[in-house]
Image: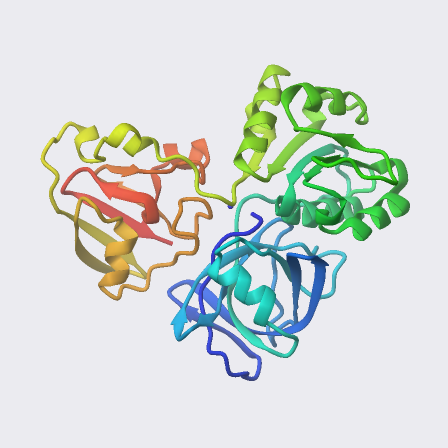
Length: 381
């Protein structure tokens, strides 16, 4: 879950960098802002100094930032734009969202020298570069969805000399292109190994690119000009607005691309299938009498029993009881709240954050999870 997301919080006063501390099994860092880079009129990249204990992260993961705004802690997650292989310091990109509390605060108020509380990196929308690998990564980005793709592209180009990377990147206009200069530098540095195709809603006056809606027809045309690789050597990554990703997914399906070769990162809440048409998640299990149900949470070896009301999520209820559960987005996207259901049944409003194998193994997302039986036991960690 990429991109612009969610966060946690930290006091506004500056503090000295400290090693990460444990909260459950999660680590929290006090990170000093090294630099603020203005990417576009409404997007910045925040570059952090490493703490005493250097942060380790994978390309494409996200950091959860925890600022204190108007006296309240807020939690939002943002994808890394940096690469652990090519960049000395970790960085995330934040695009201003209309009405967005945290994105506007960070874009307007944050400055170099400030300190933010940051949760350890998370996320499965990532790659692990291997020097001997030869593959083609095809990336589809829209707007700020390019952020984790930038991290992935830099990492693979640097670490896998036998691999190619292609990026199809859609924006409103040329002024809204995040990382425009960096992308041009990648073209110059890696030549034929990096293919960049811009798609803009508004036609620029001084350079040629495709314009219009990134629909299946255009996507197929664009993919015809990409380097030719075998299907079993090609992987596809998409991150951007839901409409764009639906078009990409439809196109790849029509091209008979195996779904295990397609990776998707969302940064807006998806549809909630369990409540579509007004259906209650409890009624969906065959019980038409909504009622509170007991859930047992196993966290760090301790058992916590909570009563979850039918209109509350498991996470929401646990947090209200001061149980220090891990979480970030609260939308079923980032998987920070993931736990394994070892007893009972849980209905989730949103399942896109979990893979098929995770679902088969019994993993659930507590932020969008509702107990369907009275014997639900969830192990966290």
